[in-house]
Amino acid sequence: MRARRLRAGLKGWGGVGAMAAVCALALTFVLLLPRTQPHGAGPVAGGGRAAQGTQSKADNCRDSRAHNLSLSPSGAGGRTVSAIRSRGYLTVGVDQNSYRWGYRNPNNGSGALEGFDIDLVHRIAEDILGDPDKVQFKAIPTNERIPAIRSGRVDMVVRTMTITCDRLKQVAFSAPYFLTGQQVLAPKTSDITGYDGSLAGKKVCSATGSTAYDHLAADTKDGTLPASTDIATTVPNQLDCLVRLQLGEVDAVVTDGALAASQAAQDPTVALKGASFTKEFYGVAMKLGADDLVRQVNRTLENYRKDGGWKTSYGTWLSATLGKDSPSATAPTPSYR
Image (cartoon, rainbow, N blue to C red):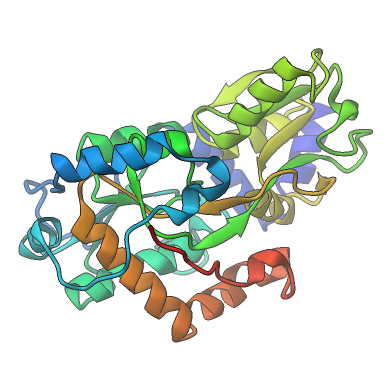
């Protein structure tokens, strides 16, 4: 029965779901674009007083306002931006398995990365370097997003990353570029109705280091969810949860509704259950102290919203699954500290 269900699930995206499942369970590897870029120069970011100031802001933060703590836009440049320009390319951590966000499409001829997040990366590269293709992509699993930034492996992460107070103590964020919320994904035939008592005795999967797991852990502890809800299944990459669900190893997945909708589009045997139970914002994550880069990215986001680039990308990648009139269909209005 499990085998039949898995096969049915993988039909939903013309076989690409199968490829994504295999990729998500494989070891993370580096994708290089363009291939001719040198490998010796690493990302550069500032530190010192600016980083301490950012952390001070994060210490006095509330999650409901975490997305309003970014720096105002500027194109003045600085040490970090100058280092990127001298190197000649931008290094960005992304996902390669999230359908319509950041994924390798085997049907586009080149197998290049595509999706809403990928469009944003190209726009940032164009604004900093004058060429949207001056990007070195690195496939980063969910649980490696912050370590990749802090270690200097990447200049930034653009990977459906929610802005939270805890994360602001570890990395800097741009202004928000997308509104979403946590939601439950389960088989259509399941008796699960949402993020509620119907999860009693159910096995629920989430990604390690995700806001989904943080909510599950807190809510099973304080009684918001039944204590019998089994949240022990965590995975490095969020898409691995879909594979576990298809295999019948878990009963439900908790993840961002925007990602869950794309996964439901891949697999017609699963569906979103209940409404979103949080309000969260995605941001571009960068190293603490890289204030000039944060301001540069915020300027890019301002222009991306104003000139219609954001709306065009949403229409291309997300409108079919999230709708033209959903709260997510409009770019968030920034408020800076």
